[in-house]
Image (cartoon, rainbow, N blue to C red; front, side):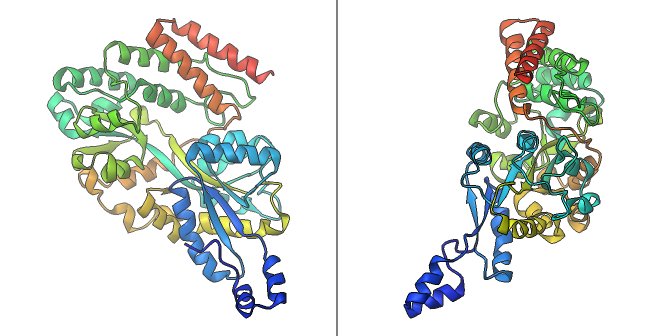
Amino acid sequence: MPDTHSLPRRHLLAAALGGAAGLVRAKEAPQPLTVAAFPLVDVIAKDVLKGWSERHPEIRAQVISRQYDDHHTAMTTALSTSGHLPDVIALEASYLGRFSLGTGLEDMSAPAFGAERFKDRFVSFAFETARNREGRVVAMPTDIGPGALFYRTDLLAQAGLKEADLTRSWEDYVEAGAQLKGRTGAYLIGDVRLLKDIIVRAGTPPGEGQFFDNQGRAQITSPRFVRAFELAQKVRRHGLDAKVEVWFNDWAEMLKRGRLATEMSGCWMAGQMANWVAPGTAGKWRVAQLPENAYCSYGGTYYAIPRRSAPEKKQLAWQLIQELTLERQRQLEAFKSQDAFPALLAAQEGDFFDQPVPFLGGQKARQLWRDAARRIPAVRMHKQHKFADEVVNAELDNVLEYGKSIPQALADAQALLVHRANR
């Protein structure tokens, strides 16, 4: 990692000589090129900047890292006030709608950048997700999280089930969960919200958003939400979810003890479980495509340039973003070290994808993830995406915990989002 407090060599020499002219030149040293990022992404960016500093010794570069939520909150404030703007911003995919539909991000489709010429080098959905309402590209994708169904082979065998019993349909998945619970005592899933989320996302029409159509109209009362709520209600009534949230200690403990039979997540979950969540379960897990061959991405990372950042550094920022997103070897290294599945098509080829994954019992799972990545449809992000997610989850709780009817819950969520959109 480059020393972010060091001065270019000519200023170090001047300081060593102690001359007044040297001190003046030191004071006039250009501000560093700054990348704002969040954990794991910051590690990847720092690795790239090692080589960057060697090729550009006249330019200081640094990564400013904050925790995930703090980072996105700080970037929201910086873009709205134009204060303390970094030169490059890392954005998680679920926040992209909030940022892309405003005016805070640079138009990378403009001739000064020419991002459109790279369109065919990425999986389609990742690049298209970065377009704003006007169709302009406001960020470049770097990693994605192709979704998969993780399942315990030992628990399935004990319950007399096969992989197909989980994947034929969402209804079959729930029925298999009842059999698993009855014969093994294991829960089907950690929390029923995960099931609701994926059914809603998988049923999103191409070109529309998860909660809003392509005209920005809320779609909460549509059939996919009804189906998601009905199946979630069935899972809860039959006691098939453990009511534990992902990343909390009780969730991790249940994975370690074989109390959760399945997990739906991005491909990066294999590395998380292998390295720290449940390493003792190695060999007992496999992955399959999601039920009904649903294809979606769990998260992902983009790099953007603030529109009001320092004009004299925009081209340097664009050069750095190209290194962060377009170089095959860097993308592969990030995948190997940080489980950051590459959005770059060229980085999805090679021997690494044909190698067995030990934690998954030697399954060649990367081939499955690659197939999913190339089938994921583009979903339009909306600036109210995070708020809509909170509203829908609150109404699901009203159904599950307080007996509110599903039609009423969805109607109330719809009304609140319409009211919010019209403010």
